[in-house]
Length: 172
Image 1: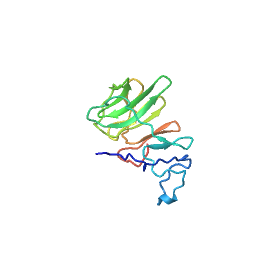
Image 2: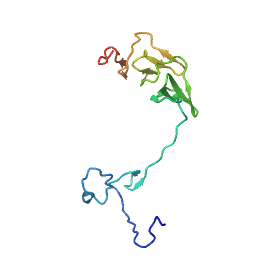
Image 3: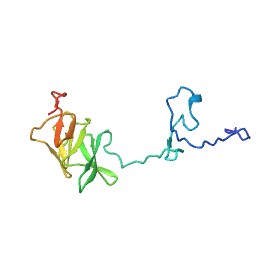
Image 4: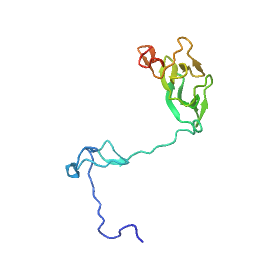
């Protein structure tokens, strides 16, 4: 049984370019310009307007925490450090080689979405249940002064802003 046709009925078409890009808005194929592509599955348009295969992906490290989802990722970056930090399970972990290692200091309520923001050399994180904590490049420390519990944090104009779990619409 043949799964291909081996006669001269097969045709190939040369399309000069897709300089007008991807068109998903038209209702009819007859409305598509000769330089537009209607189906962009696994295809990207390069700088010259040619349709090329989309680049693949690669794994970046191993398993973070067995049986736990990664709840947030952040980059801790200073003049001396550039680390990937993740919240998973009850801990924050940092990438070390191809593995992820626990950051010493605190444990958190299991498996909660965590929000990170970097401010003044520290990576702050909150999850809506535990007090605000920060990573300074070596350990995780609980923010004791005005120890607020919130689920969203932002750094703007030299200050940290976070909502409160009791009043989630207010910013403190």
